[in-house]
Length: 357
Image 1: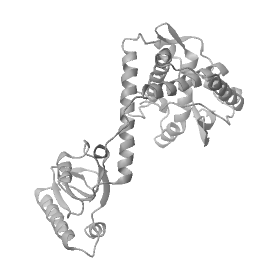
Image 2: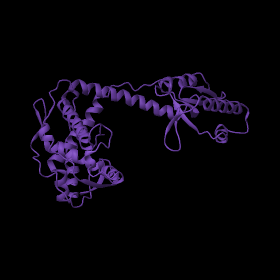
Image 3: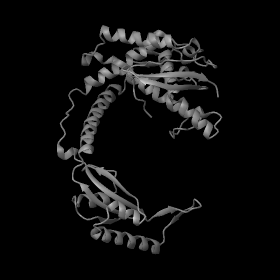
Image 4: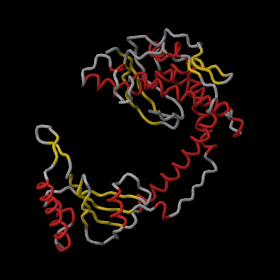
């Protein structure tokens, strides 16, 4: 699990806290080391508690729905670890990323301007003034810590832009092209009975379903008065639309091969695999909207690859060390009740109230 970074933080409308678990830590303690840089617990703790606040509504809902007494220490994210540890692990990945990029700013001639520093200071001041003393204590927030988190996050965005600046953004029409198709999927392998049990279709049942699918294909060729979708309803099938590109590796291999051999305007065809029957037809050689979105996605993937390659190279044997005994002092015992006010140019304003459940 990896969090998206923020361009800036602007939290507002915080009410009184009822449990102050975040205020007892030593914010100046060293929680991690990167080379000669000592990372203070205050920065990592504040960002962790900010992420805790972001997830609190979600976690609180599941705690109530599944009647978990201690949801922060359940594996609600299916990560193989507790929710608390999953969030804290991702927070430390981000903190490691922040300070790695900060250490390499000179290589890309990245520097914060006086104007940016003023904006960071103002955003931090607005945050401190908008929050109650109780909530600030719960978050472990100080003016200096909030400014540092904003500064590190701004550096991350600037460094990313600098790193990906020379990535090739030219994507050929052939590479970007997304073909559109209609598909009906008929499972012929395992299925669930009304009582919830899982069973295999018998050979006779598969033959009957195959015969019905072949009848549909034959009808589709001559039923000029019915659309593909209308005919599907008549046969109690569900038809759906989708797109794919030449490099698609998520489609069943036999299905993709069949689609590649079809052209727009041709009759529907039946594709049989071990698990499913597919009735498919190409509806457009190029879906313009999907193609342009795919072009953007290809460029984004190239940029992500370049950024991650550079970051990974810097982080190889960089001596990053987490002081686990110090980091273990950050615990999630309570909830934050959050409500989104509005998205702003600097970030998302969130109203936060701490409570114990």
